[in-house]
Length: 276
Image (cartoon, rainbow, N blue to C red):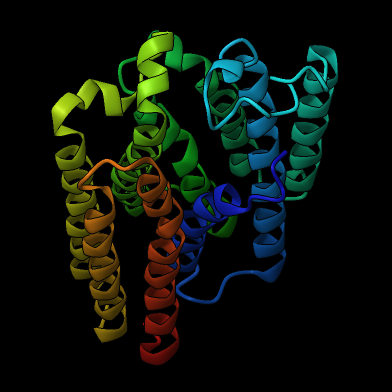
């Protein structure tokens, strides 16, 4: 479940919080907030278990993953599937008190979370598939808070999709030598020698779309200050990944928690100070 490595929970949580704060104009329903935070923990944990089940034959051959519980045989396939199903069921029970639209959206969200780990076998850009899965908290947040799916939810999803491709490509650069030997597909391999450029272009697309959202939603200084700090953090990440050193690429991936946090802080402060 990788609860000892909360980076995945945080990267799932920040975009959902962006969506919830926009949907609620800065004043979310606290019950909805609680459900979504706990739901993010449960679904990320379920995703990790399914991922390890899908990669049980691959992980022993990858330096970073060779000591995972299924790779070493400490956990059986049956145990993993029961655990993943149990976590998913708990997440589903959490959202049952919410409206019908949110419950309906949870079904494709579950399907995406469960199928993503298998896309590495045949899809040249599994990071894009992950981006859609990791963005599903956004429309669900709008649905839970407003019982509607406005265009803003879709635009925020698109921004987040670019951000996920950026940070997960940096993550894939860590395993690139191993992945090439095994023959699985990642965006870091698909981008080839342009992997660093691909990461930075996706980051730029993310920031540009977020600026566009700010203009559209008539956001104020705090929002743009958050984006400015995020852009500075992304520029720092470039210095980490430009030489493709494995440990530094992993550091850049982890560093995206701060990007998500400052974007959220900008949104939250903007609604708090300027009260749209």
